Structures are given as C-alpha cells and as structure tokens.
Length: 125
Image (cartoon, rainbow, N blue to C red):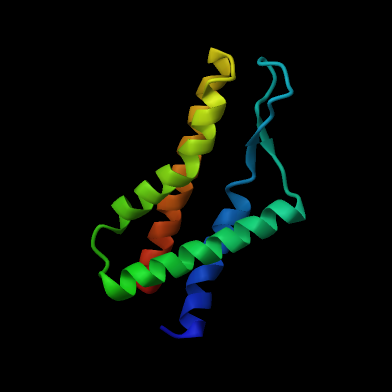
C-alpha cells in the first residue's frame, strides 16, 4: 500500500473524527440542562486525528491481508471496545437519568467507528 493511498484514506476519516466526536457529556450540569456539548479544542481534535490515523492503519491491515468482507462487523466490534469500557465504569456512579446519556454517547461513538469503516472500505477496499 502506498503512502498516498493511506493519506487519501486517512483524510476523510480524520475529518469525520474531528467533526463528529466532539460531542461530550457535561457531568457538572443539572440533569434538565442540555447535556450534549460541542467542544472544539485543538488538543482534543489533535488526538482524534491521531485516532483516525491508527484506525486507518488498522483498516489497511484488514483490507490488504484479509479482504473486504465483514468490515462492518469488525468496525462495529472495535467501536464497542473503544466506546463502552470507560462509560461502563461511569455507569455505576451516575444517576439513572444520566445513564441514558452515557448509552447515547457510546452508541454515537460506535456509529462513528462504523462510519469510519465505511469510508475506509470505500477508499481501501
């Protein structure tokens, strides 16, 4: 796989990760207030772009060695591994009304990974 092809695959995923994930959950607000917060700080976006690079390299390994079949299941499972462990720890410490927010944000993270998998299947597959 050429470096140009990797960069071409990484760029749309980096844009997706930089735009979609800054959905955060404010734990210091009252429950009735808006819990979805868009945060666009450079440090967080930098880490999301680095995360996109790791996912792109992972996808390159998948598509170059094992083929394109089952990419959606692979990225769904990776999304579950990324999204849920941290939130399951928080789950036990929050009120029941905030648990729905945790589940919603974890689901958005899983959807972000499946979306990234779709972009990478299109670019690398």
